[in-house]
Image 1 (cartoon, rainbow over the protein chains, first blue to last red):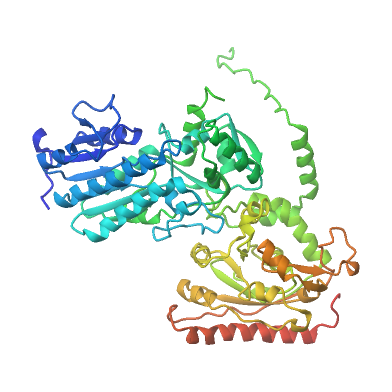
Image 2 (cartoon, rainbow over the protein chains, first blue to last red):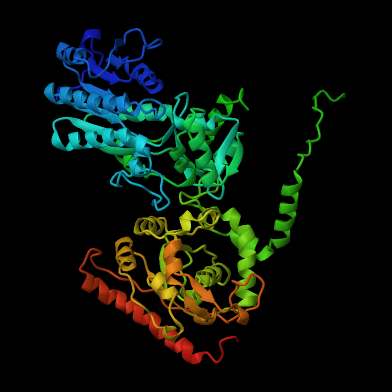
Length: 322
Length: 304
């Protein structure tokens, strides 16, 4: 490993590759890193407000031009944020993009001996289930796809990254599994929490963990440290019942029996009238809380945004709606 | 000297309009509330609770304000529980209660929980390991979680003990609770998991013998096909004619007797062979069986 250079000249900065850089997390991460690293971004989407010194390539990971980026100059770390999850879109093409894209990326990491690879997975890979233990640790089986087929991409990406970690010990691979990320990201959790009327499952009120996007970005920066490798759950500040969250952010709960809610969503989904896949009801019916102590212990990760701050932010962000 | 300090005029706080359902609910809950319960609840340990009053398992002592008075009534006036050796319950720190399971429905858990809450010098809320079907049942799942009762998984138990909680385990599980009448107070096979956990976490085991549970229901049959259909451990059919009480499921007013044994501490390797662990489990089991026999011999009548 090369010794760490401080105050190095601009060209001497280490190069870091971020996939999915146009997303909210990618943008935030590049803002954090561009002072100390030469950030190279890859995304199929255009990037409008990245820092000026970020080199953005608008392309698919599967394209050969990606290899050129790796060939140009040594890259010190790859951060893979580019997993697509959108059950509304064509699952076949998304699956291919995700799996083949990651496979290419892993190939390049191996071929060009990249010392560090960080893959952003999600704690959703464990899957909400009635029988779940309260502290799912990193060794818990990834059962999400058992009940929810559309999530198989995320599970496969996580597993591919994990097997890469074992097969190629020369690369320090880090898999991060954050719980539901909130902030200005646009994921299912945020869509759910920023509605005026929010459906909930009658008779069920699982404990829910939320994490602020800034804390996830901070954890990624921590994982860039030399010597860090492994799988890490990123839990939020604390777990609270779903009903408490909804109450504190001012959402109006509409409790419905599980079967009614699922049937209704299924029909709405079929006619493309909702953005919530019926299987996501599991998240508001069954628990899936993770144990984040490993990241706290080994990464030094500690969420800076406490639950009250997160709820405050959620309440303010949806003020116009409610 | 004129008063130069500007005192802002205090606006009276607007009274929040309360919706009638909530008002009635509040009134009813006020009726139930009990001074002794509230005092004891105030003395509970809160170190594992977050700023919202919940622990990671979903336990919230506020819910107990409305639950404990009912338990108190059952414990003190309905079952008139006699408690022996309550001084063996540790005031603080982790401990594992191991008891015999009986009575078709887990009323024995309620009685043990009430006793450790009401009869001890330092009230504690017992965290019982519950059956795996509970989290699937609407309302019951939330209610159990709020009252501190958790899904019976070894990992959950270990975390609880590491948090210095008092955990209740029935090592007989469903085998014990749905015994036929001719097997009353005969302990069935104990699982070994609890002892491994106790050794691993350095937890003292407090054995409990529960007497009275076996007579609380008169079971006519155990409808096994129904149990299989509903995915339940057992589906007992009770003779309700003998218990013509409101609710039907309310057990007969038997007198419960609880015998708390002195704490047992085990040392060694938690991953030892089944046989080695088995002998230690047998020690716990025979302690409970002895306490049961002694208690049964002393008992003059089932109901008083």
